Image (cartoon, rainbow, N blue to C red):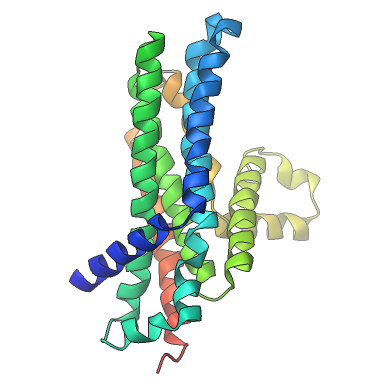
Length: 257
């Protein structure tokens, strides 16, 4: 565990030195400013719009960080040969993979917390009440970002940084689109049986992030059942474990001597 935390801490430092992360950090400020500027135009709907802005900022910022910076955390050490020194200490490969994942998500969570504080300040400054839905939605966005982080680590374990970023982004977007499309019960009736089977199979592989998106439910004060909360957390955990397990298998097949 100590080795894993050490790798996570080092990964956090590496990502913190990336210039791109500071450009991404401008995005939440822009979104918060836009929310304030449009207040006179949408007096009756401002609270809902502010919540939507907050939710979009949480998710998009987290995905951007995972795609832009996370995909290079392993490949950079492979290119610079520093991974040979790390794994020769020796450090178990599963500790290395999980440490990278933990360090990457730590950066995202720190920035997510800063974004939450930013939007809380906007709520207070504009005089609108801060509902519990804001915090509940924040937690469920973290479920989604854990999945994105694990995908980023998985693709980074075998692909170049650019290819890994493309794969991660396309997988996340495809998963969102497909899981939303599968919500239509009659989709199977409109497709060829073979195509419908293939789509259904992809539905199990691609991340169904839209299935754990509770933006509308949280801000409509619709109570969330315990079954839904447990299933969402379990889905996120299982997907993360599967991605990290596959990443470890890929590393087991590599020679670092």
